[in-house]
Length: 302
Image 1 (cartoon, helix red, strand yellow):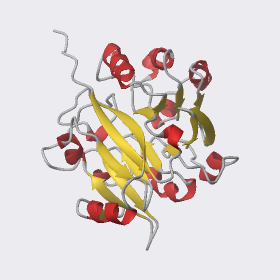
Image 2: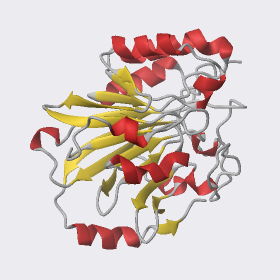
Image 3: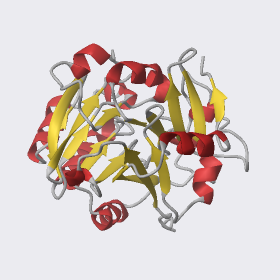
């Protein structure tokens, strides 16, 4: 019996940016991570339909395009399908290195979409009548992420900059990237989540609470992350947008991803498309800080 394809959740993240150029207000960017073709947890049709319904002006991909060497050609084909209607920018994940994905073919698939595969590179792209920077870091596990190389040549005063990296293990680099938002995946949210608890398995070199959620980077008194919304709080908000200000520190969003690893199973950890909507700031930063302190908590990954 064929398994009924599960629901693909769309998480809407309204990113509020002080001094956002008017042309960028309302711009929509989609983020997909951990496709893992061969263990894609939803059908291709579901994925493409959800992406088309979101109507993004740019699609960001967080790496891990395949689940094994046998799925390498299909992984390139999937990226081509995503790029047929959407401009793509993306990075590499550990699986892409481990399974020797054809990087020339992957680069061509990105280029055919009008976009680019970013390996310690940054680009300034036209978006909704304005411009945004996208910085892509190499995978922290099997690559060599280099913040200085990734930001070389970009305008240091850019109003909007996104950072892409496969794993949240690179969270400390947020302090070097001058980005308002870092997007990553890698742990698939844990795939199997005991009710109310942290992920028991993350296959990552970071704490279980960093497997999924929304965080704020703080540089002082020493670099650390404040958790603004946990995995469970995000699930509880299904259907309601998450609104977050990019001050007093940049944001980090760790996605649950789309596919699976080790076993094709997800429990209380549905696959996720992240839709980012840019907004101009209308509230006072101090007021917003007081609101988030009531829901957040300081965490210091080792």
